[in-house]
Image (cartoon, rainbow, N blue to C red):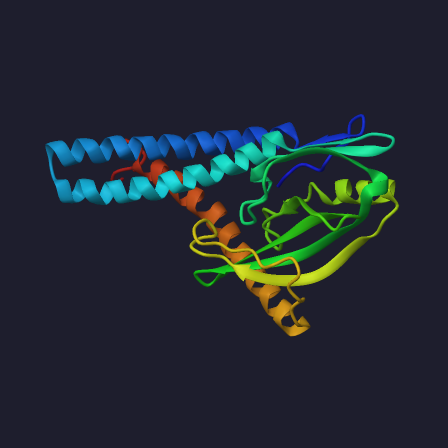
Length: 252
């Protein structure tokens, strides 16, 4: 679970523990990708080219995941919101969203230039699973939309909850409302990494029946993910314990 957001001197950054966790995850995935590439080269040249080709395919998959987590890392380390008496300074890296593709933006916006803040739920299906997130957008009086941030993995034990208070603070300072646009459904692609597509921001909200169905699928996905995260390591550790020399007693 991510730590609650803290506002220090009216400046928000993603908590250091979350950023360090993202750095560790990116380092592990990148190391596995490099290891697989080396193994594929060695096996192809010394043993079996067909097996080497298979491992190359696994290396390509892991390399794609490495780029995915690197984007997340850059997004977490670079995001910064600084509140001033008359405006807000936004440092928004491209990686602040993993499905939307907003450009990196560094700008100062006077509160008087903010027409409103908008939020919606977004559901993305992939391989029978459902991912749910909440996106936040700033609308300027010129009509320009600026994608701010997103809360991910809603309805699971891994849900983030860092940005809600930041958006509420921004709305209070600008004297505007946070408009809830309901829920939209996008394309989750493969595992939420390849072939994803976010719905247009102007897309109409889904019906209440469809929303309930997607929430149920997201909760089921979260339950499966939580069970896997707790069961698999336990089985692995238990297997190591049974495999230790001398851990089994002979017949008495």
